[in-house]
Image (cartoon, rainbow, N blue to C red; front, side, top):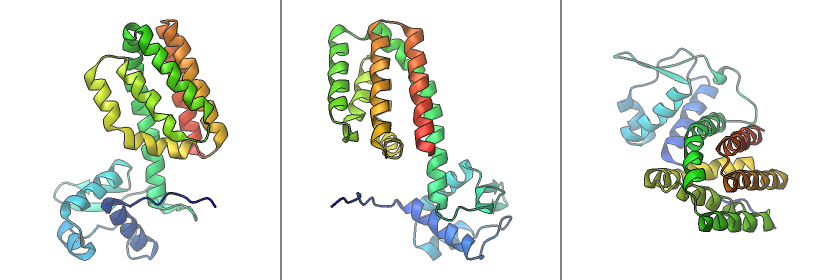
Length: 224
């Protein structure tokens, strides 16, 4: 029997879902002003900090608009034509994944230069071992993450390493959605090996090309 992992919902996600519910019930319409933080905080039983987390996410994706001294308003966005089987949270996560891939491209292209320059033969051997272990088990996505961490460690830059480790949870969310099909995971493993071959050749231009292609494929896979 197969079971899906049960994931706890963050408070700000529950806030967003409550706002979505009111929208679908017709209690909130595009162009309406949201209740004040104090009112919503009392009504939903959450702190104003949690509300602000939800508002920041909604605003970053164009769902609401904050006007200085004038409150928060719904804007024209995907809410005007909601999918029958997707919630606001689903759409926001999808948008966040795309943003993350764009950020990774900026971040990892700089990182790969340092990796090509600084990775030792021992580092490359470790990378290859991790990549091959992942290839041998195409059903365990947990084995995908160590390659990303090891790659960051090859840069010998503590800030880059810590940045990668701090964003593992976000990276995991992208991976879970990108690798719903085993074939996608196998393709990503192959892409890792191609990146590794370019690094071993100390070919910065080729390594960057491989990274860009890998991230482009991640974006395509997570968009499905």
